[in-house]
Length: 177
Length: 187
Image (cartoon, rainbow over all chains, first blue to last red):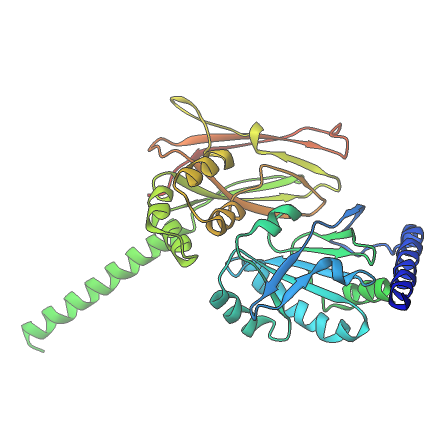
C-alpha cells in the first residue's frame, strides 16, 4: 500500500514538473544560426539497443533535454560533425543533457570502427533496419533534434553544426540549466 | 649511349607523357559537372558512372543483384543551395527532364521501393538507398544546402533539366526557375 502511494506521489510530481515545463515553453531561447525552432510536436519513439545490446528508450529520458542525432558512416558531413559532438558531449554530459546517437541502417562493425575514431566516448545506438530514422523524417543525414524534458521536439539543426563552438554550447547550456 | 638505350629512354618518356595525359583527362572527366547559379539559387548536377555507383553501394554491403539493378540507369548527384533569405520550396515532381525524344521520367522512390520489395531486399539496404536519394520535397531554409541522387533511365542522348522553386513561407513569393542543358549520362 505504502509503495502504491509513493508511486502515485512520484507520478504526480513528474506530471507536475513536465506540465510546468510546458507552461514555460514560450520562454525557450532563440536558437543560433542553423538551428530551427519548430512548432513543438511529440517525439517519435526511440527504442533501440547499442552495440553491446543495452537498451535505450527515449521515454525513459523524460525530465531531461535530449540531443537526438542520426548519422551514417558513408555521409561526409557526418564524419566532419561527429568530433564536434564528442567534444560537446565531453563538456555537457555531467550537466543533465542526454544523448541519443543513432546510426542509420549499418552493421556493428561499421559503427564500432567509425565511433572508435570519431566519438569513442559516446554510446552509439543501432537502427539496424533504418525504420526509427524513417519515423523521424530527417531532412537528410546528418540530422539533429533537441527534445525537451516533456518529450516534445523543439529544435532541429540544418545539416552538420560545430556543436563544440561557444555559440552552440552556450545555447544548449541555456536549455539544460 | 647505345641505340638500344636511346630507344628505351624514348619509349619510357613517351609512355610517361601518355599516362599523364590519360590521367589528366580521367580527372577532368570525373570532375565534370553541370551547374546553374545566380544570386538566389545554386543547383549542381554531377554525373556518376556505373563503376562509381557500384563501388559506393558495394561498400555499404549491397547484394550483387541490387548492384546489378543500380548500374543500369544513369545516376546524377544533385546539390541545391538556397541563397535567398527566405524559404525555397523544392518539389522533385515539378522537375522536367527532356531530350530529343521528349520527356524522360526519373526513377523515383516509389519505383525503387516497388523494385526492392519484389526483389526482397533487406530493409536496412532499402533505407540506406533511400537516404542517398535527393529528397522529393523540402522547404530549403535560408542558406541551407542539401543534396542527393536522381536516377534516370539510360540514354545516350543529352538532356535538359528545367525546374521551378516557389519561395516564401506561404509559397507566394517569386518563382525561381532554372534550366541546365546538355547534361549527359556518364558511362
